[in-house]
Image 1 (cartoon, rainbow, N blue to C red):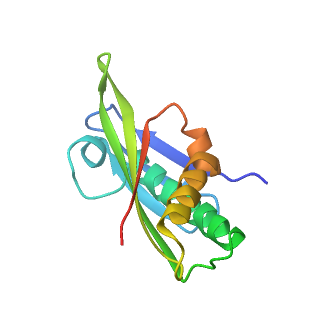
Image 2 (image 1 turned 90 degrees about the horizontal axis):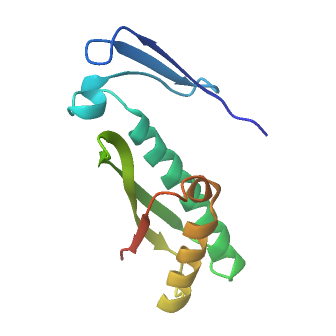
Length: 139
């Protein structure tokens, strides 16, 4: 199964602007130097990576919980993608996953193990393996 995303950029880095869209048509948004590096309204590639990672991890964690006999009521994940400077250029320097899962009376050790398995094995985590990824479970 193949998925697509599309982006168009016009102009130079600081004054230019772009649009991006998901192949499904579910999202179209504007991005710019300001939205990526200065906190201006709009989206940016790192935010989209965060959403993709949170969604993928949540699904993998849900599957893992079901696999150990605890069908979750909900799995809610926030992925914070850190953009920093490395060797004079911009780079994703880390991703922090914070997750709250409601899955009955699952023992805390089993919950933690299942979450770590999902972090290590969801397809987006695998694709981002060069980046340090942390995981925090909250109750």
